[in-house]
Image (cartoon, rainbow, N blue to C red; front, side):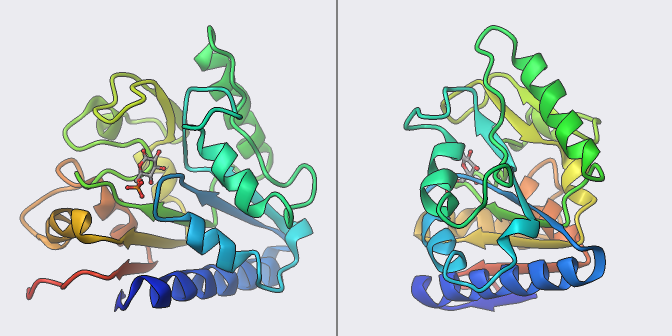
Length: 227
Ligand SMILES: O=C1O[C@H](COP(=O)(O)O)[C@@H](O)[C@H](O)[C@H]1O
């Protein structure tokens, strides 16, 4: 489903979609696993989400991707999520990526183990497209998008700084039931066109991954090109 509106309307809408999916998931399996990105578009959504009446003690929040920096670094996606949701997420429900500067694979192994212990997949994914159509830290025509793992992966040489990152892989994201992808701001207009271009593949535009999910919503404040 494609939803258009103003930035303010869409942040409200995204929070409402996420809250509904979280409630539905918890009603069925008693807990929910939400994966969230960092970046400039999502802080306002987190601010709306934390105002929702949710069973926060049953909601696990993982990072969809992380920059390999300490968790208090200004580039850390966890720092943003903690600032926005740390006051509602009970201890132990917001899962930082373990940062071992010299051993990123150890961090990935631990993060994979933690997710595996909770079922090994996300129920709900929030993603925000970059200018180039990347989501998480999966970049167009880059080894990250071609990685065949169904888990968290290490990403080297990301075209957007910082170059060293970790990310949920394409296959891991694809196992989610519900996905929300954002194209907010005029800088994302080209990425939106690419996401809707049926001649392009997921390798050309990783934001298309979310559009493969059964329950997906694409939210944009940009003009949607005619098919
Ligand atoms: O580097 C990243 O970029 C994307 C998009 O961020 P935005 O600032 O353009 O909204 C983000 O989704 C991802 O989590 C982040 O690591």
